[in-house]
Length: 325
Image 1 (tube, rainbow, N blue to C red):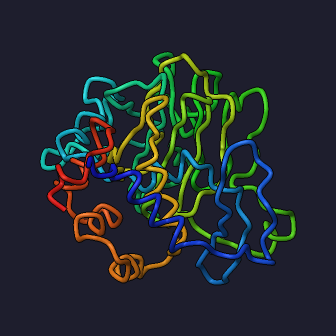
Image 2 (cartoon, rainbow, N blue to C red):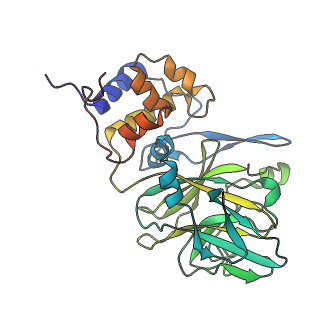
Image 3 (spheres, rainbow, N blue to C red):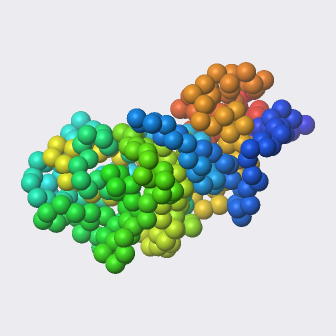
């Protein structure tokens, strides 16, 4: 008798053991795609809880996908040949770009690889104290200018780029013609009452199958910042810098091409969500599940070798007998 696939095993466990009654405090999601409702807490001088847009299933799956290898991450990072001359890659870390202390200059750099399809996830590290007045991160086509005299936002100021201003917390696209909206969206009272800062490290997610760009903080999706990224047009990750000696690290985590979202990945995401997506003790909760060690490692993304075997390149459900379970 042929053993069930890993996907079937995970899904069976999910159905049998992780059924939960819907919370009375949560409204049913009516979005066209399956979603997971989350809230995001901003920690600063005050604590503000904002109800963020439901977490799209595609975003949830890519957030739960095991990271690619360092070698692959470097292939998707900054392009040393596509930059302003005032920024350079660090010799000991090609994932990090460093800006020279040049006055009255705006300097950008694009990534090596362009994207026209699939959903992709990066980790961006940009220390708060190294941002200055025009710290913008996003995506752009080849037509976007990478250098300008003076301080401004080159990313998002024309139809060729889309960016999030980390200081002003606004989403820019063709901002010469119209001012960008607040992002994440907040009501007027919250904007006037609470002050918060985008942390040093956050995630950027690009879905080129639907033409959307968004950001994630502490595993909480902030909603889509842009809904009009040109599908079918190749875009590249980009940053806009003005602060001398600032360093910005771009680490590609993973990507899924169109249609590559099988039952195995969906089951994994459903289990992690049922255990508590934003909890710090997720790993300990996974250990309480009555599953083989290999599957626990897969759920935790702990074992890079096993996780990549199960999860990364071939996207195929592997029979349990192949896994020696």
